[in-house]
Amino acid sequence: MKSRVSGLLATTASLFAIALSMAPSRLLADDDFAYGRRLFLDKAQCSYCHGWAGDGAGEPQSNGGAANLRNSSLDRKSLIEVISCGVPGTPMPHFDEGAYSDNRCYGMTEAELGSRTPGLPPSTTLQKREIEALADYLLAKIIRRGPVTRAECHEVFGERGRSCDEIAQ
Ligand code: HEC
Image (cartoon, rainbow, N blue to C red; front, side, top):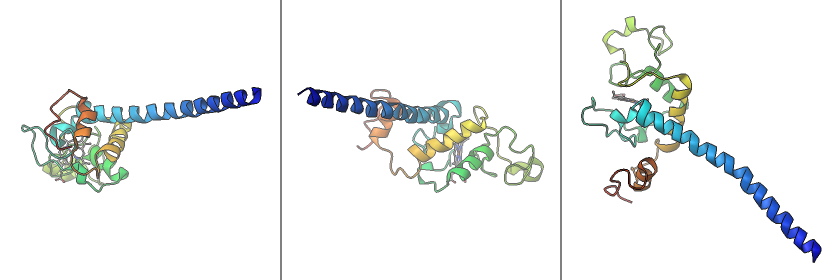
């Protein structure tokens, strides 16, 4: 009897240990995306042109024509390059402040690109680690995610934050 009780206690203890070892990594992962999401929606205002869900439905007053990032086929390295350098000849701005001060972007300087040089962002330029966090956020939550879902809307705006009901389940 005694050994059965201690066996049970040992099982309970190891279940606790497993639960504890899982919890921090779950929290960390959620937190990582919360950071990338804040950059996308607030600090960098990517959503101004690309829409909160990255589907290209930005604010009416933006330049329009922003890419539907959900259909993008770019990998992490190319995403970092596009966010840092922008897309020459289009409204996609460069978020690396010094992007065209030397030839770090596409091997071109502002002098060579002339009027095709991507502009400064509507909000602010970003640090390298912020650009990397954005690329990771896009890969985890936006790219190849198909049509925007109501669950996603609730994840971003909370249960009552915005009218998510217009989006199909
Ligand atoms: C001023 C409007 C504007 C803002 C702000 C903006 N973008 Fe863009 N973005 C565009 C446009 C327009 C394009 C399409 C360029 C083209 O025609 O190739 C684009 C293209 C892209 C692409 C390339 C997609 C592909 O598959 O080729 C990525 C990635 C991207 N944007 C990410 C971002 C991120 C991340 C942010 C915020 C840090 C951001 N953009 C902010 C307008 C904007």
